[in-house]
Image 1: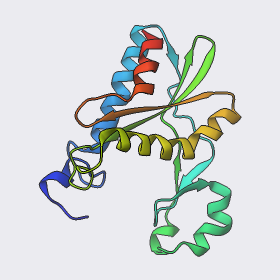
Image 2 (image 1 turned 90 degrees about the vertical axis):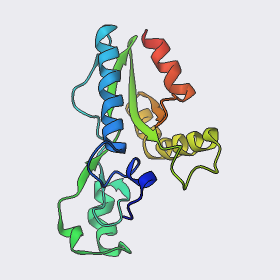
Image 3 (image 1 turned 135 degrees about the horizontal axis):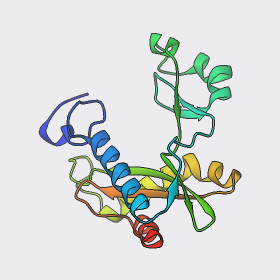
Image 4 (image 1 turned 30 degrees about the horizontal axis):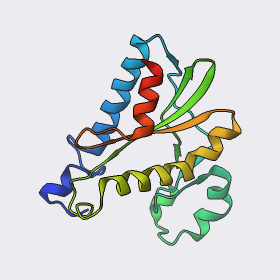
Length: 168
């Protein structure tokens, strides 16, 4: 990837205090909130049998990857001989007798590629992409799905604020 001052803060492929670090910190802070409010959560990340293609980074059911995608991926490379990575949401919380599947996400609202887009639009786009990935699967196991979305400037999306309110 290209490296410039704005790109570094949001790039998941670079080491340092970037998007992955903020994602991990958000997840740890939320777990601490749950612990302090006596809300139980599973230590293992919930997985629905999905994997990520090591070449194009597309997420799909494992069977679809092994039966079809691996042979037809447009970015077919030797990377595809690597072990595929299991993918899925980040946390399963047990809240008031219900299961809530949570996927944490951080939107970099200050990156040059997103500066001309309204923050509300960026948040809606990210929620829609996460809903497409996980909401149906969560419902299949009888769980509610929430995108725990924050911006790199520290703002929380309305659904995440509502979830925090339910916990405290």
